[in-house]
Length: 372
Length: 120
Image (cartoon, rainbow over all chains, first blue to last red; front, side, top):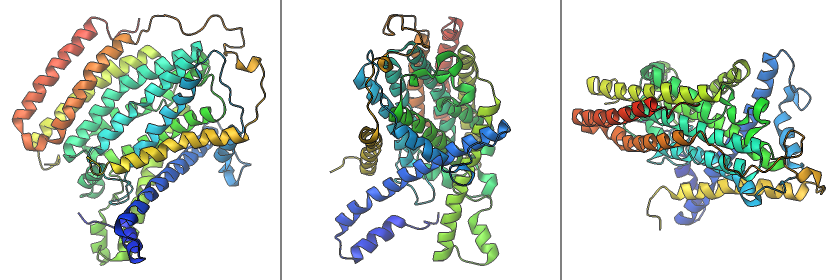
């Protein structure tokens, strides 16, 4: 594979040229991509919140936010600032420590998962060997935080909401992990970079969505359940549980839950586009396009252009999925808890296991089409 | 210095991510108002006086699901290395995984028949 642009190498080289010793240059570079990724995650959430409000308004035939900035784009920032200035209430009967730590445990793993989200060949914080598995393991920490805050509130709605959140997360984690497993089997690697590269050879026809028609549906349903989006938002079903585990939360701690759930939504969409929609790859292979236009893909400006198109492709695919998730939220009714658990255990789990075995069998039968 | 190379990024990112809630709560502490009142610190129960606490013993129906979850979560973890190395292992590994999954499918069928996956 072509290497693409190497930001890390260039930046360290620049610092070394300025007279900084190489180890110090490396340490200086270390926090930059991480801070950038946090900013990307936060801006991504602001856009998702604005989209949610605008699309909800469109579905319900009203205008939605329109006073804060053009088309109301500053509304999410206004919401955040409002929550910053709110009084922080810890109920007298609650456990103050668990009550405060709960939201932090929910939000940290979700942000941490951005470590493995690639925006291009070298545009990733670090290409860890266990990539996808890191995300699966981090996503199972979140329900501990939800359970903790539900229990610490000492409120009946919050406790039931926290328990539901835990039951829902563990029920859908297994189909999710098994559907990712089928993708991993085709790429022979857990690294998100390798997963995209394996899909990049034949343009849109090489994307995993064609080879995993069942897997991507399982992944999407499970991801919606893991992020507690509407067909599956039982932990905070407002008609039955007020706001579930968030009932006693105000101000910034509530904002952390809110942030966490939207970061999780954008993260799931990002990883969906990486696992099934070819990540940063263009529907037509870039090499073919470059040959057709008669330019060499190795030219510096072509590489910069390729990287920019790659980032745009990731964002277009991601926000298309976010759009679908929002439309689903405003058009589908909520399922009951027994229907939710039946769907997870009696339908998705057997189907995901069968999907994995069929992928393995097809890989044995047609090694070329299924990643060797 | 690091036993696992590449994971210094994980450690660094973990520290930076941990700053998010700390900074958010600290910033809020500086600017938010404090209006102590007895009523706002009572537990919310739809506007009524709360009847008893929530830290009581009650029937957690998710208990059996949690047990079945442990079985299948461990199964998934075992399948991960198999899937990554599958292209080198070939037919024999496929049959072995088939046997492994078949045993767990029997377990799932047993749990299903015993009513562990029933809500009521």
